[in-house]
Image 1 (cartoon, rainbow, N blue to C red):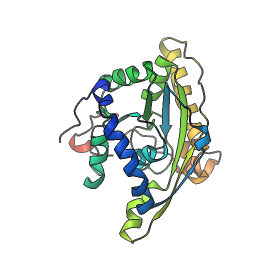
Image 2: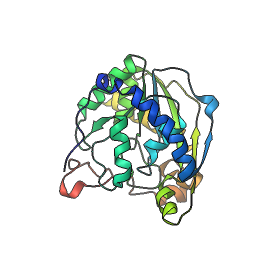
Image 3: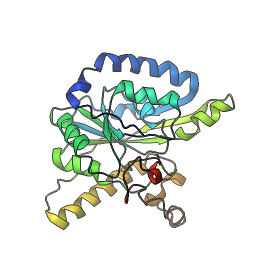
Image 4: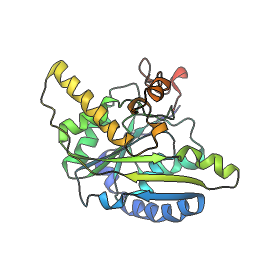
Length: 255
């Protein structure tokens, strides 16, 4: 199993011309392959530092964010996507991203992501850290950690029906997909230490997921639903597949 190389944030800046081309290409591609609706474009900030967060139910999600948002953003993403079709794997590799080998501390990616934000850049991250379920799960600590270190604003984005893009194409149909852009907000500053800091980071993560939940259909809100039955049905999806192992191990090839 080969992992994505540790490409630094400075090197990714050299891909801006290529990213402009991919942005241009995404518009006709999504028009041809999907029935896309984008809502909330009036909420887009004109500058960073900014952390774009979104739910993650499909390997199509990063491409949808690129299509909907006008930024040449840097992404933090999984180093391995074993279940994604080969046809979509070339897009993140061309765009470039900061690779996370799930089940590790991911110190390289987090350090480089912090550099992006400190120079006023825009960072895309999926707080759930994987698309192993179709309902919203609790955030992993990475996104909250970056917010606490940089105090960047957060832009929540809700993605709906992305998992139906390829099944619909197999039936010669275009899936109806939606990208909802929420209002940017400034989270509370994390001031605690030790256990108190971890508690504040957890609260920050839950706040981010609640903001995303407001932008997706009620039945997809999982652990962040107001409906007890939906929360009950989501039990078990919060279990992180790489909690006891490193991504890419035989038992860990989950995306």
